[in-house]
Image (cartoon, rainbow, N blue to C red; front, side, top):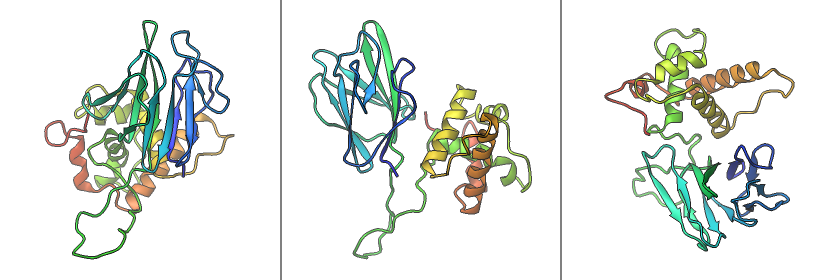
Length: 246
């Protein structure tokens, strides 16, 4: 599995997601970058920066002369870090992040996903040796876990063969805990969950609607089969007691 997935900006000259393995580097900037990320905007330096995958986090180098870059945590209630001009290999710990580049009056963004985040056991009972790697790593305070819980909600509530909720129904289920939720945000989180849980993509020849439904069905089947989501997790859909992290 790749360490990082980079999602180009709408103005980018790169089609599709870019995948980086541990130890690999990805340059980004206005210049044609070969295998790198080209951002076709006159306000972006020709060689703007570089991303390096490092195990379960990543490093950002700011190669501009006078622009500070900001890396936002979309799940972190405003949490962000600044990478000043010339700073090399600043560590970024966020599981998924949004890189913001100031560009001649515009703010350009691209996303970086780091789905290999792992969590060790809290108790070791004095045992030596390596930890057992968890089969699935899910952070129950995140929005993607809220989306997964909403997907599983009808079946968790005692209807094992209930049809999966539509995207509009998911929006309504999530709105009490996530007031700004949108259809596009739900789709984004479904795509991210499919990547994080290492589900195979649907066949290329399938229609987009069928691929989306197939991903939802696979996510729910996996989550319920391995108890990734349980009935008590429905609390994350409530506004007061379990709001999903922002």
